[in-house]
Image (tube, rainbow, N blue to C red):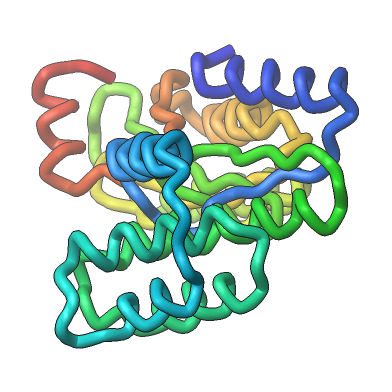
Length: 243
């Protein structure tokens, strides 16, 4: 079991043991560093506990004269209260932020506001699951990278086998494939996986099925929810033999 799948298994177990069936996943791709910066700032303002007026913060958020830093504060404050009006204001701003540099910040504000509202309305504990690649509809997004066994180019037939076997195995596991790219000697997948499924086993099964036709795939592969690797990053990994 990989480190990522091990963490998923432990998280599934924890939620099950604590009887938590309501959790929130950020649907957008926000780097982990920015997510952590949000939570540090959110916690700082919460501890300061300075009173504020919702309508004044909404006005500041949409004012063309306020600075980015002031709007960061407004977004954070509005996200801290269980108020539908505050949530709708964040939602409106995030749909078309006047300051592009606040796109990730407003995404974090939106999910945080949703959690605060849900907790207040339901009276139940809400859980936020952090992932650099986000997710959708209770599914987590993962990036996977598969290489050929000796870094040889894939033949046309091998590419057809890869596409057929992976499409079949992922479909059977209830995985949504957002992107499937086959290159000369590797291929990548961007997938949304059900939280309660052992998708790592499904990927291993797909590799094994492909290798029934000549062991042309490396059984080791990259499976991460931190970031999508660029072609250059993949090439560097192969050169350094880190995979």
